[in-house]
Image (tube, rainbow, N blue to C red):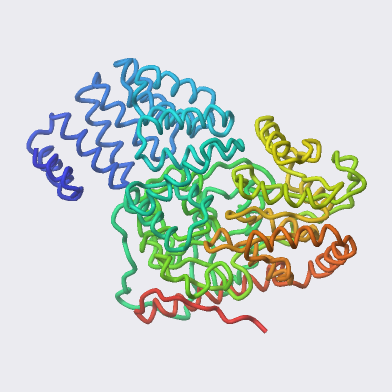
Length: 619
């Protein structure tokens, strides 16, 4: 009982101590092992939790709750096979075990069994139709392959739990992913009210779809971190202080060391690190697709650690044995992130870079990498981390990416004549206000078309209907299907002008277009994600394409559409600067990033806490 009280008070260390004493006094008490396992799992010690739960089950093998708890520990370690087996056993013992059914669906989803996950979560909502969590999990399982079902499931859950910010923000993002803008303004207003009142945690990625200030984004991230990461583990001075000029061991932590946008951007940085000054490790907890990018990355590091089977404590021990000085998290709050890793201090200095465009809201991360556009000095109060500003761009680019090729428009279903506006963004980045601006541009440019990205008929049908409502013929909207990266870059040159998204501006989308020699018109907003494309354009030597208002954005796009010679000049200029502009200079970028690591380490070695840093530019 004392252990249960300490757990309820939020003191897992005292709870664990009480349960361990209980086990010494009564080694045959299954509940003591089960409760110990629950506390260990909450403390990110999943491996130890599995041992405790397994002992509980040797004493009480027919207890379905113990099997469920064991399965959750396996799920934390991403051991889908063991988790599914344990959840299934719990359900055989108790078929109406809603917790086991929800967990089984999660395990199937994490293991790629989407259809089976949806079936499990359909069974859960049938068993507990008034449980908002069941509808939320159904939405999570369906969102990748059946986004319409996901949106409907989130809507049901949000009606049951209208004050649940995660559900409402999931609904907002899911409807945008299929360009379903029903109740868009009402949902957006409700989310803004929740942010203002700090009444519920929102999904951090969904808040990037809102036009928020850095202070508001910090508020969202801080609430999420408090609810899901627990107490921060801030920087502490080393004792004794380390050598400031020693060769540093740096570790990049990610689930995306495979065919993924992060890998396509950063691969050459990993290769170009100066091995005389840095030992470079990969800490990978994502899938291995055995593709060309994965094979390239496995040879890009001094050591490639597959940490999927490890819990946070084991990863911390590994980092200590590897002598990691600086750990760089490449995920942040993006799909597949291991929050148990983010909640821990795995290295003396920890940084966030590239994966998530915004603060993580916790002092467990010491620094975030930005640049003078995305993270200007006046935005530091909107970040829990100290900002490291690189001189050109925070985003690297791989010069080994495919080169653009001459493409026949007719092969892409595009007209031979007339302006082709490209807007090949993920559909969730398109909202009603932005689409209205695009329709205004099309109306002012007769004969032009808008080339969009759509992975399903729902997006195509919705956007064509909105276009008709805006007085634009539906056949002026043309759609590109998903293709491999090389083919995608090859086709980009068929566009005359790219129209950026807002407030979640183009990241890889923009740098791919600039690499292909296609000008991009962007609008710069307040938050990190709303400023990325502007920073990329400046690093590519094209600041004239950056606007700061809706009107200026629309006017610039229309003006360029009416001056084909100016578009041709921009294409020539971008193509000629491909090998000389800072945006695509991988060696220059890597030297700047290494300079940041060295400045940060010298501060740490002097016993000084994290502080905002401007990295001086190379000559």
